[in-house]
Image 1 (cartoon, rainbow, N blue to C red):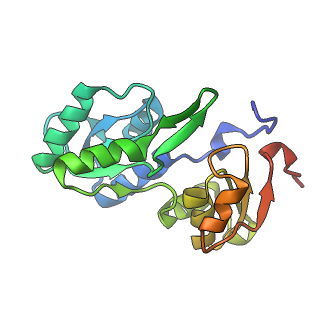
Image 2 (cartoon, rainbow, N blue to C red):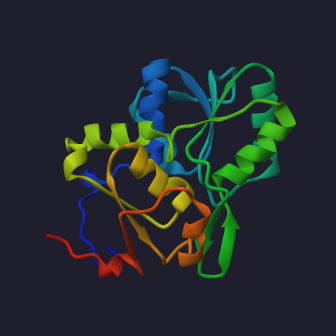
Length: 198
């Protein structure tokens, strides 16, 4: 709504929701230790997962405003003891008013270096994210457009899912960044405010 687009909550699908659906498809009613915000915890809870730090099946890393060394240390120990490592997305940085901030991918890299275990990223650019989203929304790829501000996750995930893509230049990727990639967005806009909805 802050962007001037009114979308009901039931039409929004997040990487946290995709991660919960993925985990349920792999191990229904499992246990997970989570580093992330309430949306991730709620999504896993709704899929029947128990949130715990006692012998979890998975360590699940998402975006959060409260990364702390105790949780990171706990995650490293649990993964080293056999918990599987899943993360919502590989974005290394996000953008806020003050500038760039570390994101899920950066913390995942830290945990990977400490454990030697690669995380499985469920969110973009993994095509699973798009498939889960289209199934959730009941839509077909021919009627879907991927809009995002990152060439390395948003645009490539749309392309790999067979969607039209729109790169908005109000976030991470710039017009000059496009030349660094062997693929191109279908459309480029200065911001989502330029989007014309039919």
